[in-house]
Image (cartoon, rainbow, N blue to C red; front, side, top):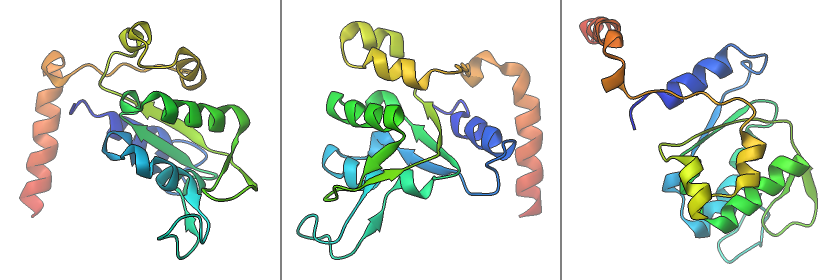
Length: 163
């Protein structure tokens, strides 16, 4: 926690050819299993009791852009399986729909858990790691990057001096 995973993801997005559209973030650690599909995939009107209108999910919002999946290590097996299907097929189904929605999304995933250990323990799918692990960047905690402290202190001093 606090290493700058989101800052790194935003920088990657900003330097990419997808920078013209906003990066969409999903904190997977904060989404309950019951809301996962609706939050990521959206839903059609009438899909469930409170679905009074069509709702766009985060994946669709990120179409043509970047979707930052923060805390991917917190997903349970069923949610991992659904996400893997999206990555493999480059399409998804809104809740309640039988019509696939094609996507062109750059996925950036981050976690503070040790994924290799989670795979050995059976709590994270190896095939999902294979799909998302095109390029791995390890960001060490700030306590191991003491040389960054003066730069960060200077940045925050300037920001708060303006206020």
